[in-house]
Length: 628
Image 1 (cartoon, rainbow, N blue to C red):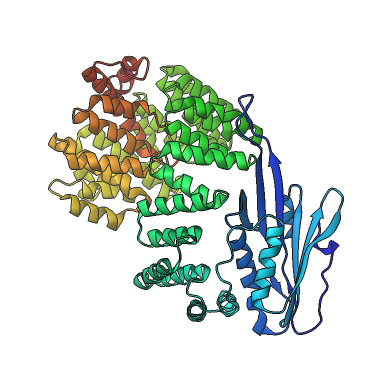
Image 2: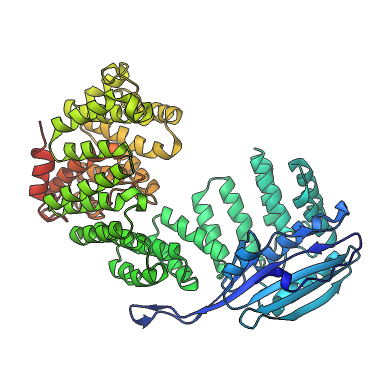
């Protein structure tokens, strides 16, 4: 499908402009569990190709950028339409399913000609869908809208009908400096104060320059100007405003309004579903991901996200129902079984989880560096199948060694420590720490951090002073997060002082987890879980929900049990979180055994059975049998 198959008529005057874009129209029947789950879903994918200005007159370069933006805004909100920017014609063709609509714009500044073609790939025939002459920018916009409406693709009207505003907007997009662009955007808004596209771009530019007050003032002005019947534009203005204010509730509400105004906007619905996941509104997120997956059955990410959302919502039957269409979308992808393993692990079906993880590993041993087999080891461990757990971990470590990964030796030592062979684990770690020339300073620092944490667990919280005193017993500095833990867990620190210390020395993604760990150490030292500490654990668990953070989740269970909320603690422990790559592996051998003891105590206090079979034996192995 080459764009050279129908060369446009080119006027050899001062102005020549080529705009090409494609639209696909696909139909799919979605069948789940052997039954039709919904009606036929119509979907259009709009591929906007980069617009090229071919003329010699720089005065008209603005038109290329402006027309591309106009098309993007025009089709936003069309039923089941998803927009993407194509890299080239081949990229667009790869997304085409049954029809391709091509648009070619040529002409002179005073008389632009707009021609839309429809090509049927099966017959290689091209037919003219619409042709019109546009002597002015206003008429060009009108012709563009009419052509898109003829193709049943018009969503909302491009947010200006002012030719002067359109020209200023285009020139702003083509401007070489941010200051010049801002001036032109302001001029466009003077010509049409309700020009949403220009207003949003101006507010975004002001925010990037650090002028948040001016950005918010511009958005406030736009919302006052826009009438209520322009619901989609209002929703995206509110979304920009909420984002500037870091208002998560406002972002969620704005996305809900955007999807209500434009149910076919796949980008907006996807953002909404992800935001709902972060807010722990798993039922809503699952529904939106499933809608997206049914609309685009080949998008494996939608099926995968829907399965996790249903899992977190506690709806195993729905999660299982989506596994088959996910597998049809990705028949050779090991991640299908890996996700199924996470789902079964979550519902405490550990043997089934281990089998799924093993299947994923055998399909693709390189997936996540062999991490599926690591999770299989943990699943067999929770199932009480200790020999199979050891075998799985040996396979995982063997895979790492085939990849020449130094982490193989540390993972092996961590597992030895967890399984009670603590002196053996320490000897292996000490040997690694001494071989900096072989492993490198970064890795030996990681090993030193592990040794440090093992000592903290063995000697009690006061061993934190080892690092506070310089960490000399370990021969080198431990990792920043572990070093910070030593600093922020000192007795007498207020919560404000702790937060300040963490903000200074810890990367942002790890701060929430470290706050939770420091709070746990304080509470353990004082023997009291305050309402503030419990709230800290709840916030940390919510913040790490998307990455399925294990440490914060288990600390929340411990805090609930320690504050007497035993049944709620059991519900938290029942939501099993498999070990994932994002978590800090240094903490696993410390937190997991202790968490089982917490669960056992909570179950006994509540007079209810634990969600793990053979828990007594497992606690014995990991807690009692592992003590020195």
